[in-house]
Length: 174
Image (cartoon, rainbow, N blue to C red; front, side):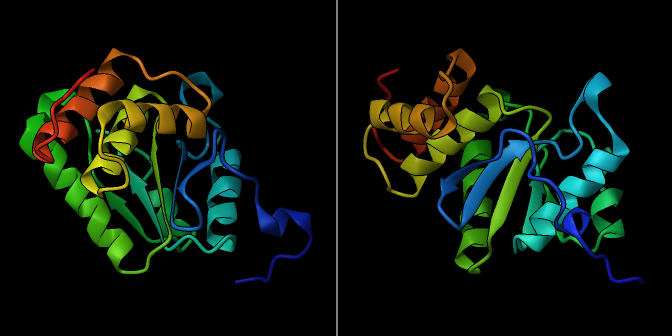
């Protein structure tokens, strides 16, 4: 394998990249974009950026297995945790939050993505704040994620926060 030189070797930051827990856990949209905007070269450049910025693992929350082979091609460890939304219920949310917690417990630097940075990801991350004991009220979780991601949390996201609250024994107030 040839050693890459120059700016291209550093890759490009994925779209909508945001830290959830500084230097530990981030989110973004799917490397390479979605739908008509998806480009193989961009996907490669974004995966290179993640690798060069010391991410230990990419976590795909996309329900399908599309493009997971791209991570292997660029020697980037990945994990597939298909996430369809609130229909996985309280137990499913608890399992998913537990999986994330275990990955972080391994001193891993992870990035999670879905096709877009939507309520699925935002709500899951706000719920994680409750699961991890970083906040103790649903409104605090919502305000925190809205500030971090610079977007409002819609009904689906709020439903995910309420499921996490129920799992933590906190009264859902959204």
